[in-house]
Structure formats: C-alpha cells, structure tokens
Amino acid sequence: MAGTERTAKRGREWRIAEAETEQEIRRCWPVFRELRHNIPDEELYVDRWRQQRAEGYRISFLEREDEVLGIAGYRLVNSMAWGRIIYLDDLGVLEEKRGEGLGAALLEHVKKVAEGLDCEAVHLDTGYHRKRAHRTYLRNGFELESHHLKWEVSGT
Image 1 (tube, rainbow, N blue to C red):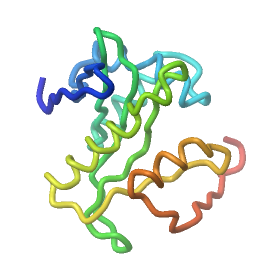
Image 2: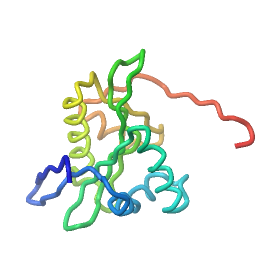
Image 3: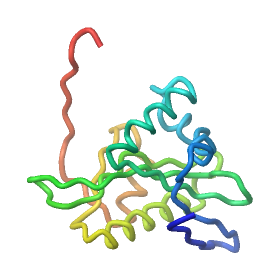
Image 4: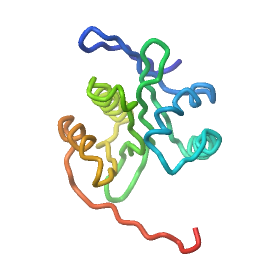
C-alpha cells in the first residue's frame, strides 16, 4: 500500500494509508456513515467514490488493530483564487474515538501530501455547527478566511 505511515500518541500506535481498492474504501464506510448523513447507504458511497476517484479524489484512512478509525478525503485543485492546493473534502473520526488526536494526525498527513505535491495550501469548508471540528482545525494551523455559499437547482 503506497503512502503508509505509522505513528503513536500516548502509547497507542496507528497507521495511516491511502485507500487504493474498493475493499479498502468499503472499510472506511463506518466513518463516512457518521460524517455524511446525506449518503444513505454504502453502495451510493462507493458509487460516489468511483466518480470522484476519476476526478483525482483520494481517501487516506487511519487504522488501529485493523479497524478504520478516521478518514481524510481530498483532491488536488488548481484555481485562479488559490493556485495549486489540496482541497480537503472530508475529514472524520469515529465518534467514540474523538479526542485521541486522530483528526490532528490525519490533518498532518494531508499537510505532508500537500507539501509533497508542491501545493501552496490546504483548503476546506466546514459547517457552522461543527464547533469541535473548528477547534481542531484552528489548533492545527488553519485560519478562518471565508464563507461558502451555494445555490441549489430547483427540483433536485
């Protein structure tokens, strides 16, 4: 598995690796199920992953003792506004494992990916209600910089 790294905090070791197969993607489903309530089942999740993978989307996962505890879904983006960046679409840790530094470890992993790809930054959007996530991002060097707006096509 490419991109594997091992680390430990408070005596507990974990491994971060890039999911490369559908089997590995399916192992990440329990975390995505908690993070993305708008995806009702595993098959839709896998279908979306297939589509996004074709567009450069990658998922890294953090596991301990063969259980996936956290995920980071991201992609390389080149934009007029920001230049070459990693856009972090998804970051999640199983509810019962939060507070163990796993989200911070995944953020550090994504930062290393960005540095390795000669990116200028890592960007993300987060919902106003995700206050605990905001604290994690701010503690890990991210800055609040903008609002994200949307317009929905009627009938969808």
